[in-house]
Image 1 (tube, helix red, strand yellow):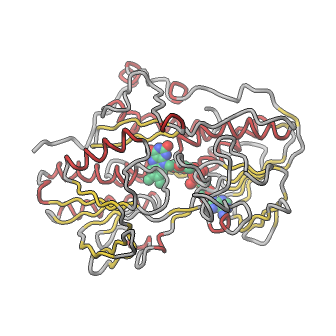
Image 2 (image 1 turned 90 degrees about the vertical axis):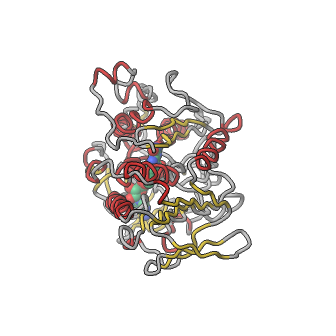
Image 3 (image 1 turned 90 degrees about the horizontal axis):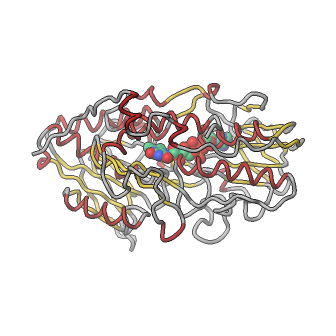
Length: 444
Ligand SMILES: Cc1cc2nc3c(=O)[nH]c(=O)nc-3n(C[C@H](O)[C@H](O)[C@H](O)COP(=O)(O)OP(=O)(O)OC[C@H]3O[C@@H](n4cnc5c(N)ncnc54)[C@H](O)[C@@H]3O)c2cc1C
């Protein structure tokens, strides 16, 4: 049985330069937008959420708009680098590596409201806050990210993560660390049934549920007795991934690796004491499955207060669940002074930080044009990217967008999206985090 190293070699700057990656964020992502002229305005701009999308657009608008009153509403004091959570849950990173204070990224000269938004009255152009206060706006940017609905899985709660053989990479950096511990305990037991799940809804980082199956398999191989561990993957979808070539590849790879695929099933209930999961099929029929370790991926949607507002999609595939934005201009389909960015929007792709990076210059340019009374000039092409980890130490950099049947949009001539490579892994492990922080600061 082949063995792999859990500690891929650390790279020096010289080696990274050889790979063409040494210039860090600037090399990864071209500068955009910020060289544009500043625009004078007295507009009141309210940004809901100060995560990847909200922080990025706040920095961009703070540079671009002179005289505007920009307010960010964000209850958390810390910023989570969520793409690092798969590394934590795979036993590779310490949890603290993904956490920084929001103050590190906040632009000067804006108002920061440290609480949650509780409601949006789009007709009155007013946001209500958790403390009962209100904020009126001329421009609203909805950047709240999405809501994790663990409660829709009967018997499940985030408190269970790390105990009873339950893991989930999505519930925060500490939950990711507890997930790694649960996997470790399972490996130490010497064998048994592992179950990996994917829900009925869109999820952020659609590759993460798959990465967790692959990195767990890598860790099993490290122990040396893969045949003693059964791995099963349950997904509500017929597919593994939205990019067609990668979808076919993943199906083959799961089959080759004996990770048994079950399509058309979602996790509907869990009994932690009995270590039993219930899956519901397309006809509403249910099946029970015993597990020794289970990776739970909850259903996801726009936050409840966005769902309760008149900004939520009313028809089509995103009705009742996601923000009703034009997927190209990022402008709301019914309220032109409202823009959406990040995970909260209804779109066939996206829900990655890489998409946020592509969307932010579009939202900036279109807000400026809107304030100037001009046609919206910028269009998002759906760009999204997933460093799809297939083994610890190997990944495929899958970049694609809306057009041409979700064709690949590779950024680097030396990285083939159809090849597993150590270089793509190096990008994930070393390069994306600094590039991400540069994005938050509005520098890329
Ligand atoms: C396990 C995992 C792995 C990932 N891997 C990758 C990857 O490899 N590559 C990649 O590109 N992306 C990855 N992502 C996805 C990426 O992190 C998200 O797509 C990105 O963070 C989306 O940005 P956002 O601003 O929309 O949401 P977030 O960054 O989640 O920010 C939303 C913000 O809104 C705030 N908020 C929520 N409700 C309210 C309210 N009522 N009022 C005010 N504020 C509110 C929240 O506190 C939060 O700060 C991963 C995500 C996870 C969880």
